[in-house]
Image (tube, rainbow, N blue to C red; front, side, top):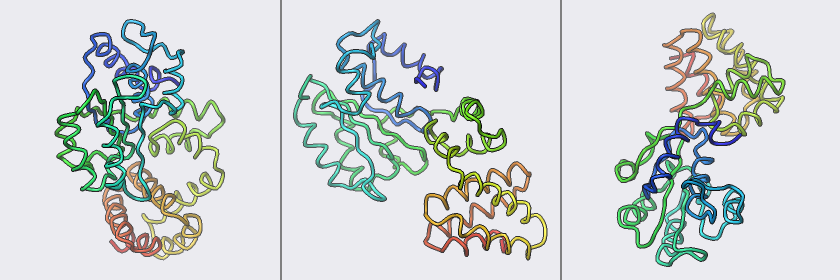
Length: 287
């Protein structure tokens, strides 16, 4: 699905900017849904050899290489483990001191900007404020509140709304149950991620178990503790456990159980502080 379909309003906004040739050099894309697709489309506009009223053609060699993340003057930085390390940014800054290989422009995308180590973020600040050459920087995050204020204040922040209706329709058309599609659409930040979860039978089975736990939380505590014993084996790694907390929050909000949803938030905070998954779930019951 193209960016014009994923984020039609933002697409029109940026199309006007490109037609006026007034693209800012530093952005923070917040929200995730369609953010990478938008960044790649804008990157194409910086290198395209056959611009059409300022918009990239999508067909030339440069556009195709950018779409494949394989263009020499396009640099994509992602977390190395849990953080984007200072050395990663220092290596990047070395390229800034040179002009591009194929043009006088370079485009940088930092995916997971909230994971920038503070020292890495500080190293990046000067290049955002005073780029040495024609550089365009796109920082992508699904957690804007975790991005350093010093970074946010030096970029144009663009919010990418989560297009739940688009995701739901796509999943339902591909055979996902409507109830599962509705839940998944509130979890993800990309269509690819949604399709991946919808195609994971073990994940879909785990949704049913979480629904039982959410229901048990509104009844007898003993029943809820028993449900935990069924839940723990289904969520073995950090990523799936994080999804479990998100799903629980969504389910409890739908049940109008604001107090229990708040308990989930507190339990998740314990979990992030390395309290094990089972003990964190028990914290929801204990309050």
